[in-house]
Image 1 (spheres, helix red, strand yellow):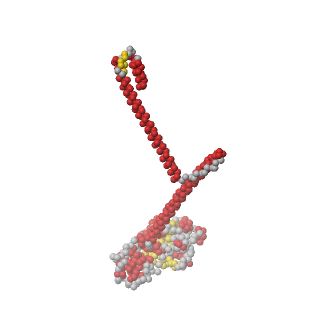
Image 2 (cartoon, rainbow, N blue to C red):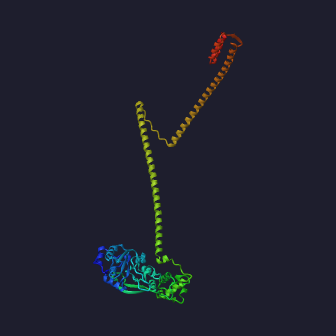
Image 3 (tube, rainbow, N blue to C red):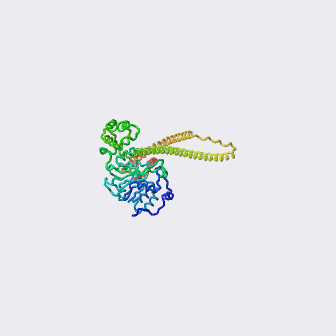
Length: 489
């Protein structure tokens, strides 16, 4: 497999073609001089037969030098999508020796991508066949270094394939942690003008190779507390240790006895002294508890959570304000609708009244015309319109008069009905008595064939005819006349 690349556009042509430029918010500075990138590869210990992870490949300047330095495989990690076309072109031309991964290096699982790309495992005591290199952005360089340094002691992530040397070093928390776990070496100085755009400071190529045996008279008991102690002391690097160590807990100044002079400043404490201080602090009864997740994220998760909480509160307030505005607007709209409805009703009433007035005027006009023709009397005065109360009162009076007339008529009708009833009862009684009398006389006629009346007797020859005539009599007056005639006979 050839280490040479096929003819390709120069880096300057690539930048012009795709309109690439460095973003200040991402702390981007390009290395476009291939002589410099080739020298970086040579002074970094060589990459022959190695699997190399490149952090922040950018337009591909350092990537090209890595591909021509006999590296077995180059894994280029880049999060800016603007560089994808240029890097994809380079990947296609590499004949399978380059793998492009578009991702944030802080979120990349190094062990996973190394395994997927066939990286070779090496014992801890031997030289590793895996390396990581990159033109680290200034804004994330420290976080990346801390991420990799934390992986050295447990031999996980990047270091699960061996002692992978990494590439950045003033004495600081990062310096102490790097020196305790690795051997840093500055291999090449770079002036700021070598970058595009040039930064305000110069740079250096730093090789960091993990130690086989970390520094310290005794093994470090807890690596999280080691980083915590370094961070707390270097947070006030110009103060004496006796003043700064109070941040570790009540009575923490007793931890300095026999190890560190209380008047010493943090920048003058050796790595071995930091290790001894940390081991004592791990057994300290008043030590602070560490939120590992928060600690490893440098407080970013807490800040992010707080920002999200503040944003949620702001959104809730905004929603409440919007709801109140909507309720107020809805109330105003309803009030306006009611007002419009009332105005419509009022307008309809006014139109009805106008129509009624118009009809009354026409009727009066017609009536006045007739009257004027007859006797030329003055026009009838228009009666004032009664109020609703006057109309109600007038209706009540009319109802009372009607009720009064109805009551009087009912009384008269009741008297007439009473008289008729008495007359009927009297007539019924008279009829009953007449029927009884008929019955008695009829019995007499049947027995004796004679008619008895007022103590006188007279014999009749044809009693049968008398009886039939007697049965045909209905009224009392007829009955008396019948008796009188029979008596005369």
